[in-house]
Length: 268
Image (cartoon, rainbow, N blue to C red):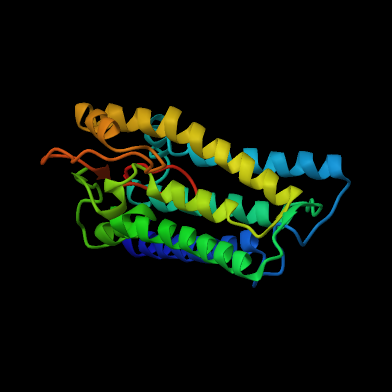
């Protein structure tokens, strides 16, 4: 692939991601899109449950599997290194689009808040969760996270690899994974919770906890060693409920990472 073609490909992958992210907000919140978590295709409850679980599992396997260092080493035999991140972002977006398209509703209510002030408070909390997701990507290198920096650097004939700098910024002083915390807030802050929404929230919460604890943090320890172990001791993983000790001057913090609805990895 020529440099202009790789740049076009990376830009297209970013646009697809951005549109998918915006649709995800509407899909979960139930506003502004033709199919939401509670309005769309229907099926018998057992069939709907099986299909929805399969869609969630497919996304989880793709999202975590393609982020593994061993897979990246194999994958870049066939995909240009500069386009590897963009390919990951594009495939993750397509997996989410498939989920939005084929999701079967389970619309039976689990809870419904009738107080208008309480409803608006939950809407505001969900919006804050989505803002936390987006702002966290900029704290760790938004454009590297979604492949644009790599394809742009390649187009200019520059090194597409990042230096792996380990720094602390803003929310990363409070929790190690504010991006994941933002997703959890956005998924659970719902004034109307259906069975389908509850299934989605439970499964994505379980996936986030498992992926962060068993995959993400293992990779980060392997990459940053004692620096990350110190960060683990000083900063809680997701919930800033206890007093955080002052980090040691150098180096502490959160590595540059990736999101796209998954765990945070270095965007190489």
